[in-house]
Length: 576
Ligand code: SRM
Ligand code: SF4
Image (cartoon, rainbow, N blue to C red):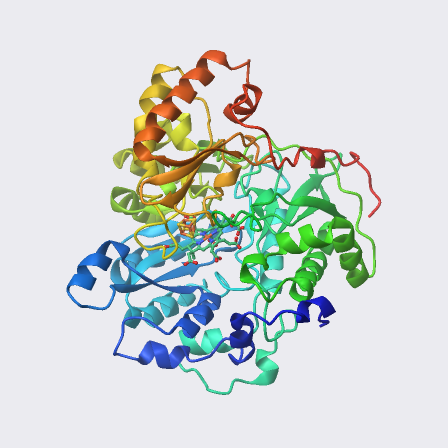
């Protein structure tokens, strides 16, 4: 593992020392979890438990009251269960459903990277909950932390014949880039953290002792769907078919990311750029080498500058490609042409050639609770196929056998879920991050506010005749960008309680970012302003023109951050 000379000029960030001295992610986690004097864990352990998929939080709704009462914050934990490619079994669903009630806040959150989150777990319930997750062959390892996160993949088994192969490759990449440390098993599965660890068993051949400078995100897109928002990923693979429709390989993209900080221009969201092409059997090796380039050259002195997007921006695509090829010992191919149509989900029924069927259900912001939770429990009890979490926080009940379909249709009807997908095109294309009350970084509401805002906008949508027009609207409670707001045709980013920056002009297919339209709007201003824009769009749009494109054409904003140039690799070239 080489250390670039320039990286030694500034002192390492303290997290680098913490990781190096943590004995492969053990640190003092066990002692902190066993400490009955507090409901939380120390700051150092909080950094390390992220690698185990666990975040200490507190219920922010209760902060003031607890302060007045002189009590410590209402500490709780979030645990993220990774689900490679978003596929899980009915048995796994039932286990998570029960755990949400017995050990968490009674809800399950489907994230926009095809994982599950439990919120509201008390410290004493953490280990039993995670042990139970592992019992059904799922885990929380590397769901957070400075490692490769849950690898995403388009969830639709019959959207394309490329799907099954691509899903397997995505899973192989996830397995290959999983941390090796035994600490996770000792702590959460076997419930015995052995102090020393075994240096040989623990060794991290890819990551080393200090893992990566920052989180690293990988996704697989299958055109024409860009549901995973491939350009928001550190590393993306875009499936390419040969002229017989078989998987020929992948166009590789690098350097995407959404996060920024308000008023800090040196931080910015960035679209990934096209790096090259590789064949299916080369993907795991390519992913590993790209990750090691970031391991060795990513900024370990400043965590706000530590994502791969900054390494790519600072060093340039040519340098990155040369370095990756040097490590591979062979040259990447010429990127192939790809066309994306949209970033949304295909709701409702789709049918496979074998007679099996799939039902994609709209779940607002991925929060599974109340009647929806009950319905899905009943469906999981009879379903013989699988569940697929979508990158837009929704759920596909997949591979429903012809015999079982009437029962599942009956259950959907019984709980009114057969009509959930009849919401307006605006709501069906809405996405919010979690934000309050659990997210410690939230500056404003998001998951609890966007549904209400959409309801207020729906009237204008209906009266302007836009009911069935898909318009991508996203909100986040802060500029970290979890809801990928900079890729929304209408994006809201929280600044302070009740105030949002409004962005317009992203491409419907996720290939162009939006631009700041108005800063620090109060919610009372947002509603009439957005209603007016929607009405104007309905009246003035060109035939087939998307809202994001319209915003640019009529001069509401200037376009920025386009990936359009990347859509033109030489079609059919095969030099890899
Ligand atoms: Fe995120 C941090 C929730 C997708 C960029 N994200 C957080 C934390 C863990 C807050 C924290 O660090 O204390 C949030 C937990 C809130 C809670 O109470 O649950 C959180 N992020 C989420 C989820 C659950 C949003 C959702 O509603 O679906 C998504 C979980 C995905 C998963 O399963 O792994 C989630 N986060 C994203 C995405 C979208 C994506 O990856 O496609 C992004 C933008 C893409 C990117 O990474 O650039 C994203 N999250 C961030 C950042 C900014 C990172 C940066 O380097 O710029 C943070 C803050 C940080 O890491 O310091 C963050
Ligand atoms: Fe929290 Fe900000 Fe991410 Fe929303 S965007 S979940 S507020 S970190």
